[in-house]
Length: 388
Image (cartoon, rainbow, N blue to C red; front, side, top):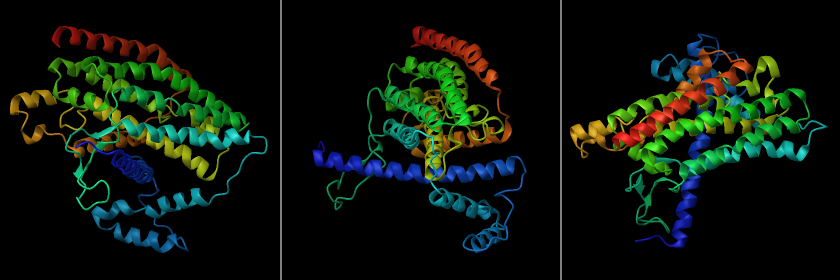
């Protein structure tokens, strides 16, 4: 039976609250994981080794975590007090606004970054099955007996919505740099604007490959058909498109090696130099939320999404074993695992590669990525015309 208006509104509110709660829980975990990954990869002192002689609240917690870390599985908890202290610092640090800053724009800029970063999750499909993730008990008020779906909404232009809303975030960076009335933030904001304009073109063209192969803009339909209905030859443009898209994704999220907007060696801290407290925290929340979005899109359109095999190879497994086989069923664990792996790649790259020069950044975008993504799009069009 179709849901009533009240049930629709209540279900949407429940899904929104759950989604925001998960994102707000995952983002701090990524920041903690970033310290751990960089510490292990670079073999450096930090959250992996130092127990410290702190006094006060964090001292006993730190020493307890260090003692627990002698157990191999629990060694990941070492450094947890540093993570807790960082969160507490953001919440309690003095909120400073420069005297000559444009105060209204200075205050609004972090929100302009964060709101679009969270809004794009509305169109991401975490599980495509019509049976949903679970069913509410019949005794549950208002929505009892209804299914909790693996997506907030399934609009037929979901990918277009994601690209359109996500591109608004750059305004927050540019406005934050300009409103600070300081040279370093202004340069960081201008760099970010030029960077995102440059890499938005090849990123969009790399995403046109799955759109062309499927003939839809629906996130749910794209993720399912790309995994289950592609000919074997389609793996070629999908494989190439994945690496082009991920490269552009690093630039779109201002991550190493393309973090020119906040290059500490050149711009102190870049566009958010003058920000303190939770205003600066909002910029970080937006950055890590955008990392999750980039990873979710890459996982859904190139790595098989909710199915086991990447690059459209799942269709060959379906042909060999049959659609009813357990390995050919979608699972949210496949999707979350792929997203988690791609987030690890973000951290891995930061711990490994140096920062590009600004002219090198522009060179890669305009002279390399745009031509090769055009060629890859042509290959996808030829495959669509000949084999599909």
